[in-house]
Image (cartoon, rainbow, N blue to C red; front, top):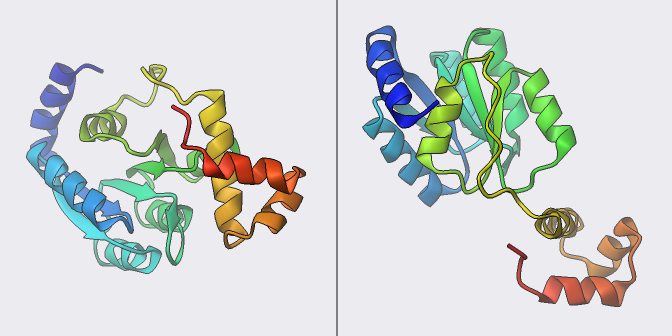
Length: 189
């Protein structure tokens, strides 16, 4: 779907309601995305936690939702689940900085229409929300390299182990010094 199609779809949908719930604990990203989505014709509400997201849905279930996968008080999948219960036809997109296949499959099973890697720009989010369900998604223009995916996984496990190098190395079945060298490097592109 190109930008003109998105604009035409937005114009046609404005009368039908464009309520959008954004759930993310990264405040600067949340405010930038909210502003950008309002400029694209959405009626935006924001939440910074799973509980705030659930409460917003209980109050008034939106037509669209963009939810971060990892939030301070839980997982964005909990928000998607509540949204599906209240508005089964709602279109939700999951954002994540730590993509993995299992969570992507779970998100789609719970009703998400797309799964985007952070930082996603507003055009990507808008296209994902408004894309036709039967259309096949275009491959990303700049997909993450295998090295980047590996680095992201190591960082995620490191965070889950409370930044304990020895425990992370044990869980990844890797020598501690090797892990230390990887952690000392910058993220690959």
